[in-house]
Length: 357
Ligand code: COI
Image (cartoon, rainbow, N blue to C red; front, side, top):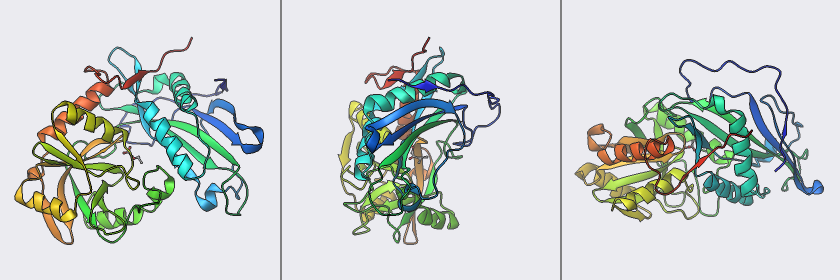
């Protein structure tokens, strides 16, 4: 893969204090253009991070043909830089783009571009505990036209942000508002994709939850408003003793990389994992009678976020005395241990970013 490199005249100072999440950006970004009449992807380049030029008529600004991914680069104690299952992000990006009538970025181009950019930016991968380089690949329609049709030109960009925990709460329980008015996804829609529109449509419920003193929303299915789906922008898992329940991947739920990895670990450890549509009444009942022993959200950004309280139609239920559960903590420690290279990686999930000469 041929990637042109354009040297920046000035390099930024590396941050010394708290990083926060997604606030600081590195020196370079990867950019590629797609033009149907030029045979597809061309002009792959790593250039200084900076503003992009777009026609005001660019189709993304009108009809939201935009998709994205999220993954992290981790620095190991011995100074290696590694990614976690980047091929899964590549495949999900292909599926998101297919659903939005956008072109595929081939898996080797997606992973190759990430590795090339992270290699250039390796000094930006933080060394402090709990910090990583958040990588944000995204694609959008650039064709200047306000007629509604799949665009004929696109840009694929990757930017990187040294970041710490996604939620200020870290791995501490949060209060969750069960949303029974707004919905996130419906069958046949875009719920399984990472498209910006899904997130835009979720903000109203998020504002509503926050106004009531809750951190995140628990989404119910878009047809019956009965079955539990996701929590905020994360997959949701519910522990009933030796059984863990999570919504199935059948069109409305995002196929999370963290979700998939946690299911694997749970099965390795002898847990029963049920991927099924669980009624909210069953969940609330379990929370009240104590059969629901732990609950948590899973995602790349926050890894695991324990759920300490649910509020549904004015009824409140506290889970595990609002404490981080033992299994939740073990999953967090194991997954992050594999990611930062402090414990063995039995499934060969990590991929090293080799240093190019
Ligand atoms: C995740 O990684 O869990 C997310 O989807 C959050 C991201 C939109 C910042």
